[in-house]
Length: 378
Ligand code: AMP
Image (cartoon, rainbow, N blue to C red; front, side, top):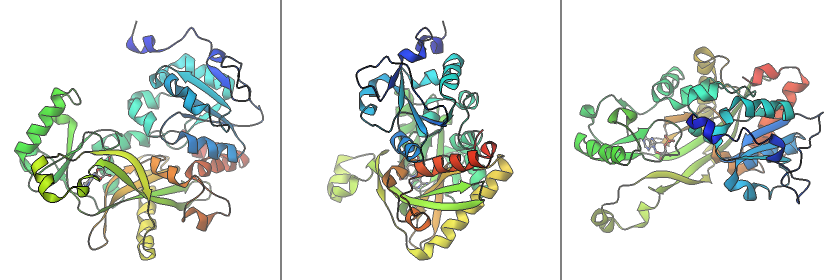
């Protein structure tokens, strides 16, 4: 039996894994849904609460696929109509499981960071459930080389890539592939430091070889994450929010006086534990929009159908207030969780509280209304 097969509870009919939220007493009731309404589905992690709250606000059925260990947490939320709990998110690639979900719910799947970090790109691209946005561009997000190509095509100023450890000269940040929330990143200033850190990761089985690492010049500045939404229906780009990440323990190190920093020999890590809201100087906004528009156009050229839906450009502002982009996410980011009731930027565009999750569902509603669902799903 393959590893994947073992994870999948093929024998359990889906209705045994579904809890109807209207019936608190039974975890084994059949699903219940309004057949006139589209179902919006996502995985229980990352930004799922915001996504499904937004879907409910737009009057859709909501479906959460979560891991068993989180079932009790998610069942607290009344806007989740149905929960399917599975042992492991990897089960989502099982064709029978997908067929069941399609037959019973006919859902649209909203992808987020957990889907990308759980599946490899072949698995993700093979998903039969319609995915909101461009699923092909997620490969460009998770492969560092493709990512850089798309950033260059978008003319986003980015830190110099260092092609080999021999070329390390000055402060660099070393990253793993994929969306791991900054986990495992480290700083180096020379080849020796790189080799030492890489060996630690190899020994702890985080990576197989140095080849799995990606070296970038460290961009000195304050981190800023720009959250956009592009609508292929209206052909408009919206800026819906801005945040910065709260990262342990790089954000903790400044709390220790320098003499103790040096003596304790702490290697800072970049693991994200939360997000903090940011409002930018208004004079910076023209370039913010311009960067987003260049990204949308470049995506259309390199990865058709382009960048429908949410995306994020991530970087730092340097001392001259110039933006240096080190990353993008080609889907909703967890930083949007800050703005479940709207952000200072969404409030300027919408009269109702508009989270990124709700904006996604609004787009689905508009696409259904104008028979343009093909424009927003792949
Ligand atoms: P990422 O996963 O690439 O978004 O990076 C996680 C964190 O690492 C960011 O929030 C930054 O704090 C830091 N970081 C990533 N790349 C760079 C860079 N080139 N220069 C400075 N900091 C970076």
